Structure formats: C-alpha cells, structure tokens
Length: 150
Image 1: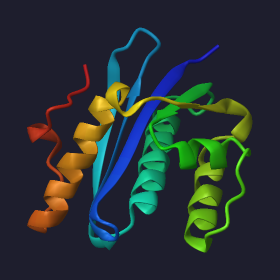
Image 2 (image 1 turned 180 degrees about the vertical axis):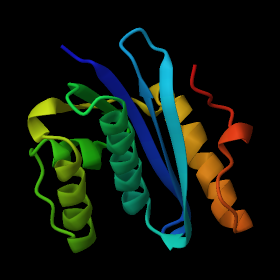
Image 3 (image 1 turned 90 degrees about the vertical axis):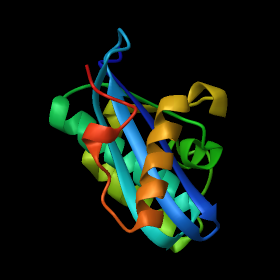
C-alpha cells in the first residue's frame, strides 16, 4: 500500500544550461503535503536536474513519514528505469546521484512509475520556477509558488 506519492521533475534550458528541479509529495487522496523547487544554477544537465528532483522529493517524504511506502512518479524514463534497476547506470554523475537517492529511504519502501509529461504538470511547474530563479540568480520563493501545500 502506498502511503505517499512523490511527483518530481527537473529541467535544463540548454543541456547543460540554466537548470532547476521540483518535487512535491501528495497523500493517497491527492492533497499536496509539501513542495520544493531547487535552482541548480547556470550549468547543469537535464539528467542531473531530474535526479535532483527525485532526491528532493524523497527527502520531503522522509520528513513527512520516514516509514512510508512511497510511489515516485516521474516523466523521466531514464531515472525511473535506472532507479528500478532495469537500466544500467553508466555516467559517474548519475551513479553518484542514484546512490544518494537510494540512501534517503530504503529501496524496499520505494517504487517508481513512469508517467507521461502531461500528467506531471505540478512538478514541471516547480522545476520551471526553479529554472526561473536560477536565471535570476535568486532563491526560490515558496510563498510565491503556484504550487501550495494544503
């Protein structure tokens, strides 16, 4: 049974380029419990941004309930397949990020589901807010976010 649902995304305007990641946690009823956007600066790749979104979502879920069974939903086929163990991780940066992600919660607590981009709009909005903050050289302002817990 899934206790929490993470939706995560990351993006880069240019690859590498202006980058940001976003994640949110929902309960099974769909209520957003927490959200975050992380500006990654001017020179990060799309894959680093996607993995960062995952990591930040897992951290949020751990803060909410460290014993929760979590379903991660992402539109990154690469991250979903690599974290599910179906695809080999070859790039050193991705190996490091995947190892970090797998330490946040026990892999026995986490399942990964690929979803179409159209179904990942809230996480995409957060990653775009993070990219906008990166471009402006500022921090993300949660109070000004279009995605609010509650």
